[in-house]
Image (cartoon, rainbow, N blue to C red):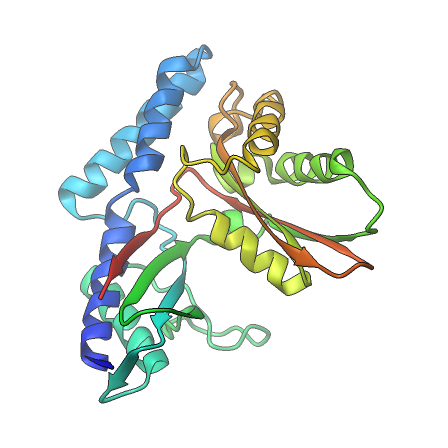
Length: 277
C-alpha cells in the first residue's frame, strides 16, 4: 500500500490547471502547424498563423490561451494500492483547481446554480475517477470552453443503423457547430455503452494524441476527417480546408436494443495536461 497526501494532489492539480491553460498541447500545436503549411486559402492561412502565434505568446508570457478558461474536467486513474491521507480526493482536486485558477488569474466562469445562475466565483471540477491496477495516481486536467461544449450532441440510434448513418450524424453536428465553436476542431466521438457513457467516451477521446490512431478505428477516423474538411467551414468559420485537425473515436460494448453515439466538439485550443503521482 502506498500513501499519498491529499495536499500533494491539490498541489499537482493546481499546477496542471496552469499548464493546461498556458501551454497548448504539443500534438495540437504540431497539427496547427501542419495545417498552416498545407492550407491553400490565404485568409485561412492568416488565421492559422494567428492561432499559432497566440499559443506561442501564451506560453512565453504565462497567459491564458483563450479567455474562456473553461469548466475544469479532471480525469483520475487511481491505483487500487493507493491510500489517500489527510483529506478526501474530491476536496483535494477542487481545492487544487481553485488554487491554480487564482494563482494564474484564470477567469472563473462557473455559476453555482445552473438554473438560477447568479454571480460566478465557485470553481468546482467535473471529476471522472477510474480504479486501476498499481500504486500510482494519473491526473489529467481538461479545461473545456463552452463555445465548443455547447455544440456537442448525443443520439440514440436504432441498433440496425450502419456506419453511413453515424457519419451523417457526425457531419450534421460539425455543420451546426460552424464558426461558433472556433474551428479548426478536434472532434471526439463516443460510440456504445449507455447514453451518458457515450458522452464520457466522446470527452475522453479528446485526450488522445492526434497522430496516435487505433488500427481498428483508423479508417473511420480518417474518412470522417476527410469529409469534415470538405465542408469548407475552415479556421474560425471563414473558409478553407482545415475545419478539423483530427477525429478521435472511442467505442464500448452496448445493449442489443440500442446504439448510443455522442459527438463532443473541441475548439482549436484543445487543452489538457497530465501527470502521474
